[in-house]
Length: 213
Ligand code: SAM
Image 1 (cartoon, rainbow, N blue to C red):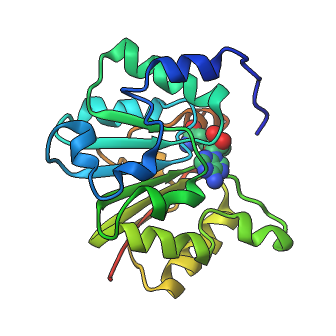
Image 2: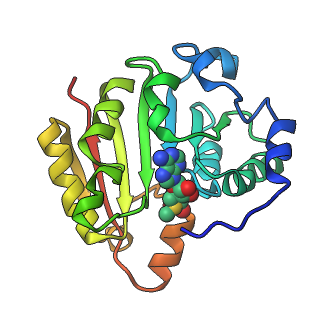
């Protein structure tokens, strides 16, 4: 993904340290304190510009949402969305999601969302896919037993790979859709990439993988 550099992004993120959590490791096991309330905790990996995250936060005010995004020039748009909407049930982490198990304690997270992550189609790049087994180990660790990893992609190859990867790892699969936008799924909150792909007529694949441990 090409990212347009915004030299002012870092200072804007720092100005809003109430929303952009500066040292997420310090809150491991205690995210309810960050939100000043006990509520289910849902985490999106690779939040991008935050359309999905803020849409979900508006729709489900009784859930605490955290979005993790690597690029400051991208997450700064998610921050602006939170500010514009006045959302108090969202926090942002500007870090690599590889740190997931440092940010969250075992069984702390009720649901994870992984939307339109990079497919890394070459075999030699398998370990970079966010549905590679090393990432699944982290997801399983932070998810409660019965917690759901919600996955959407436009990429058939990545979807097939991920179904196998989830299944091999012991996740239980449910609600698999091979064409989400024609499946009339209620309550689908669309992401930026999803809108772009769907407008081009591409199919959207979706599944839920349930943590069994
Ligand atoms: N989820 C958004 C959507 O559906 O519109 C954005 C999809 S975009 C293709 C993937 C996003 O994941 C990018 O913004 C990228 O910076 C972020 N990303 C990729 N690897 C990441 C990682 N290891 N940790 C955090 N964010 C990551």
